[in-house]
Length: 116
Length: 112
Image (cartoon, rainbow over all chains, first blue to last red; front, side):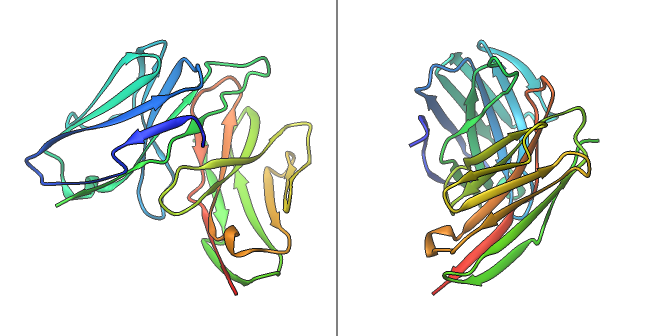
């Protein structure tokens, strides 16, 4: 277990639905990330929160709305999604920097999202 | 633009055999390179991490090599087991940058 949990693990939603993905980290980290993973493609960084402040919004459509109420929790609110948004959504966490200057990211198990 | 290219895209090997995965990158300035293993339906889990000064790192039956001059890395799996069936992702980070550059992964299937 990596210490990063995500719920739900699977989600099927229609294009007019509103749903939320939840991520929780138990590692004492202060940065959290949302990634999108589509088949046969590299992970795409969507959002980054550092010390509960959004520091990255990687040209993500407004139908994806992140929320970080504290350093342990991260949400991704979804509304009016498109079929091409179907993917595995991964959450990760890290310290901002360790003594070696690394940003070791620990990933959750992901939410498999299917938009119908 | 920082890029990471992996080859092959997929491979099938018989249980007990060895295989080698390749990773080429253009990330600069280089900080470190990681190999992750991702089982189907799960998140990536780190196998090895190497800095500029390290040219080999082992984790059980997994051995990673790094040639920082040619910007190439390989992951060698020895005596493969059915549980090695997964996607292996090469991830490179630039110095003091939280953004990681991901390869598309190599899908390894181990058959009995």
